[in-house]
Image (cartoon, rainbow, N blue to C red):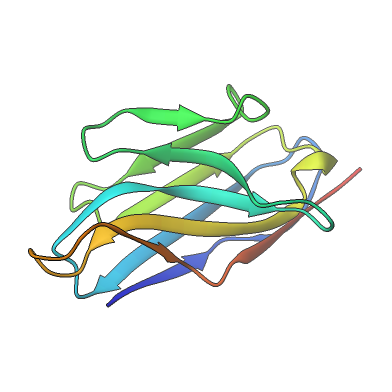
Length: 121
């Protein structure tokens, strides 16, 4: 199956920056959507940014112009550069991949364990 390992979370002051990384490994035939979601305490998990295998990227309105999503050339690593962070960005950030472990598999959602991002005011 597909494993996702995140890194790069931490504590930062408002206005600061962090860069999250997510590496996919295991049985991977192909990854379609690849990106990040987040969940703040008491709230539902929400989309932050995701990119398709075709290269299009979709951002939540609250992070547009502050966050940048990128994928490496091998397409098994995705990065989230977060600039001008705000206290409301505080959440657990989860890597997500829609992937096929085998050529005959249907697309499935895979999730990382999450990395904490805390922005102090």
